[in-house]
Image (cartoon, rainbow, N blue to C red; front, side, top):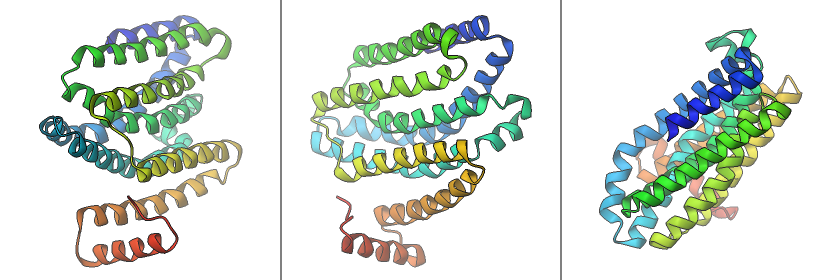
Length: 265
């Protein structure tokens, strides 16, 4: 289904917007799929077998899904922020300045990737519970919605719909798989995961707006990327009880969070 919808989208973009727009779309699509696919594939090899072993223990499975969601968001956040802020340079480095129209598409797709990362661990709950047909139809609905939006709106909206459509689809898909996971194992996000997702998405939107309007948006993106890199290091060190200097920094950061009322659940 995925391959067919991708082909449908390419044909629609090429026929409606022309070969140049198809190339711009393909450039943004390739970058978005490759960097986020690397993160998810690396974790999926370990996560799915563990989830399958715990699926009959709803509390343990819920804890694992929350942990995996937080880890995925932590590892992805610096990349999201950097890619959004530095999108013009990334496109020019990997392709050329002629691909400038792909920048806007890429930024929209990265915003959707934030939601994609949050939904990714939830999709595995459906598979681990043995609901393969439900998973198939859920994915199919999302893909058909994506193709339908692009096919129907590209004549009036132009190339940017190929990015906006991704965001719209994941705004639909994320609540859907969340409800299915809740029905399957009584799943609920912890408060810390909700806060982290909200913060990352808000920061990414802000960076996208600022970097689109002002040249110094790239500087803001770099600073925020470094901040999130540090926070990711500290948080992961705390979660894994790492010792040494990193562990001490994590312990200090935890005490600060407690004092200001941001203690993780």
